[in-house]
Length: 174
Image 1 (cartoon, rainbow, N blue to C red):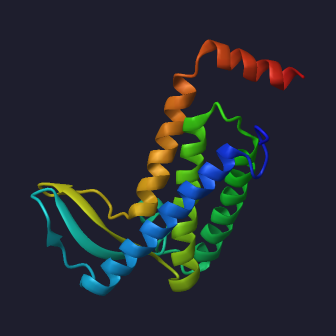
Image 2: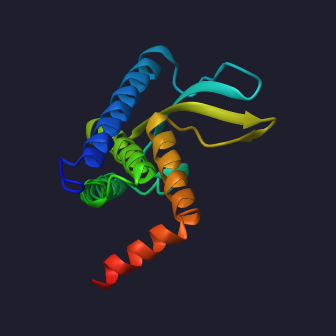
């Protein structure tokens, strides 16, 4: 089995994780859409609600009121980022376990939200976290996967060993 490449062990692990995220995201959004009333919170705890929302923008409803062009802009961005994730997954060595997991999470989350954008023109959100009168913007499983994947990438880059950094530098010089 090659260490890197489109079908390497690390890439296949990333693709499998992406498929799991897409499946869980799809299932939970279908549940939320069929069970919850739009913008009517259902309390789970004092700080957590289920609440169906539709986001035509990006994170935190960025550009949600832009008139419609943002749907195709964010679709294009998601396709480009997904292609980058697939290429990146195919190039990471098997020793970079956490990077493969992070890329799989980001890929799955991006494709999960892309599916919504293409099919509905908006992303289905249904998780609402709050404290008192302060509410975090509603989100979904795909958003959570993207955020977790990004956090793993950041932590991996911060705590990468000196030996791994030296190996990366040597590869770049070659």
